[in-house]
Figure 1 (cartoon, rainbow, N blue to C red):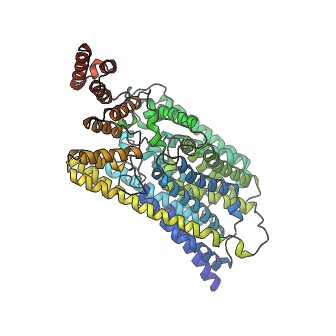
Figure 2 (cartoon, rainbow, N blue to C red):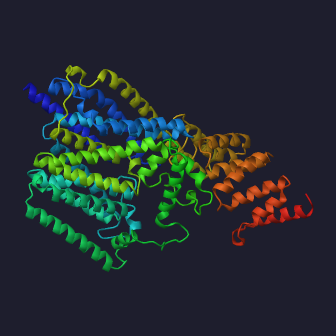
Figure 3 (tube, rainbow, N blue to C red):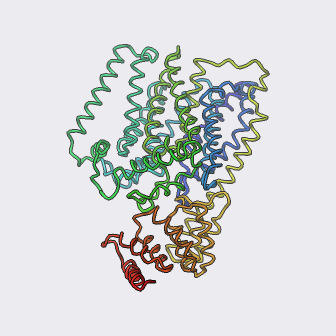
Length: 637
């Protein structure tokens, strides 16, 4: 009875822990903040780990009579992940704005601990792959079902335009990120459909249909590439390791033939169908070379451009990176000479839409090496499993983990799943499941020492809990800040300027000085102070805002205006010259700089600058400045 009770406790802890990670966390949302899922999900994740981490040794002792073995945590993959987490924190030493990187630091710490705890918990449950798959299937049904409900309730069944499908997000904030989540959940569903027994097999089939069908309808091109790549990798692995999967040579030939026929049929369908089919149009757009929509903007919404900028940033800071969370703070330094101001295009250009470039730019060559090392070790572990004398279930599990990991890696080359809490948690569980499976078929012999020292809990646990405590404090402050910033922006909309100042002050915290759009908190307070006529206070706020984000156009331009108003023309000119260089398409910056040149007796420079502005872009203020500059130059002033 005692053994049965302890095993029941272990299963309860297992289902609670992984149920929260894979199902519950994906349903957390706070509509009172701008980013409805990032900080709102970071807080419960860190809090859950703070509670769960000390319970791991307690549960392990009840089940096995000893502490968990640390052998699994010495795997190169875990070492690479630990190095990446450490380098993420160290990168803040090279950041312009340290507070901008705290979200990344605590998110990376939390997901690293998810990896560690998962590695320790999974082996304690016999045939753990089955309950883990069941939990993932429920997650796929929950989030996939929400996506189907959004589609049917808002638009009805059918293939809709991409613009319409952008409203279908399954509580994942973004349609592309929703599709990437389904790419991670689908392999578990397929594994359940193949290996589970009884009703759960049919539940796995249903979940595969729900997730796969929604994935196809969402029209995310990066997700399509990930799905195609993952499916191809799985078919190749099935062909190579068919005997381990229990597949005869004939069955492998049939699978390969069906896959090839399906691929040829899909290509033929896309090539022969008209663009009136939205899915076909999205697929064809992958191979287009010329912009066909809104030629004033770069193709793909600017991906090629921002990748180029990111490469320049990497070249300038290849050793140390610019610091976690500081990509966007430094991004505007590279706007001069380009044809697009991202601040006028969309608010989501706070990542380079390529996680590998993003990591390199922020964490330098060593952070990049550790990040790439995680994936290299993951794929190497899958290769070890499929080449070993593993069981049929282990082989199928490795095959579907390969499918999901390939899909995630490809999606990371075109989007930013690295930013999202759920995607990183699922990835950490993926890696843990791969490692536990590998060490099950190729176990590591632990060094001979007392069981109590199998894992140095007395040394590892206290600092981990302290770090998680700081993470809770940060997440609480960040969440409160976002709520206040929503109210401050609402005050700007309603022209309630004192409310803007009050809410901006309440949003101020030493933990975080930038909002979800990387706008300094002090900037909003400055806008309220300007409208209230408190110009010295507004100037002080904008100076603070410039320290937080020294490249933001609205910060340096408005600060220059206040400097000019106070007669501080040298300071104003420095701001406007920077704004003109960083934002060459903003004619208001040119006009402001020319006005300062006129006031300081530099009329010829003002004329030269204003004449660069095309006639069709000149407004009344520019024409007045040009006339005044010519008059002063003629008068010799």
